[in-house]
Image 1 (cartoon, one colour):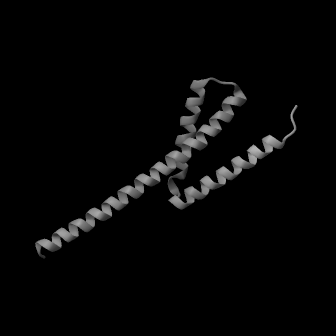
Image 2 (cartoon, helix red, strand yellow):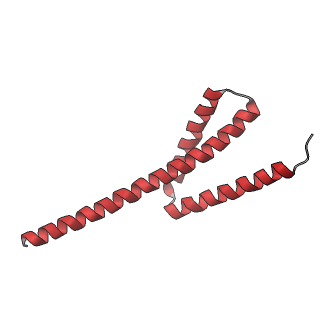
Image 3 (cartoon, helix red, strand yellow):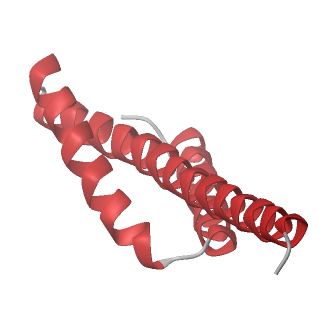
Length: 104
């Protein structure tokens, strides 16, 4: 094995390692962003229902974010994007219901 072959193998290993690292970082960030927004929405709903303070909002946001982050760990990136799309559609339906529902 020549020195050129060793450098070629080293550069290929480096490229594969960088690709895997960037994919795992993107997967973790996608899970974190999805968990944060869904957690924030759920904690805002609970805060409005219970009339609790800012500390409870922060606590519930962290709890829901970590729970959703853990739940999404077994999904791939496309499955997480589909999950996000379904959540956005459900939010839109809920918003439409709130706007159409008769007042008191």
